[in-house]
Length: 91
Image 1 (cartoon, rainbow, N blue to C red):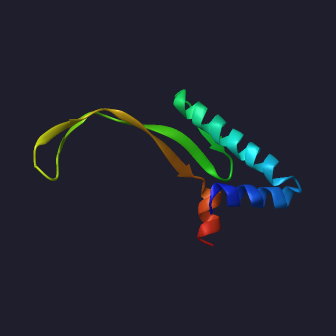
Image 2 (tube, rainbow, N blue to C red):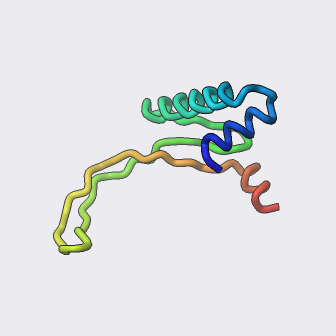
């Protein structure tokens, strides 16, 4: 399902115009992204939790040359599903 398809489903189920549903979806994504960028987390009861995972700097290898390279520390988004979502997927 794409973002537009999701917005259309939300619009249909709530009786709002598709353009309004798309804008609400965009705003939701912006708010979640902003909270993660600020180092916070977003918990949605019954669905899951978005958080930031910190990856330490490390040494790696270039697969084509075998040369040792330094991989910089980074942050990555992480999603942990709620038990209610897991139960729905595995009845």
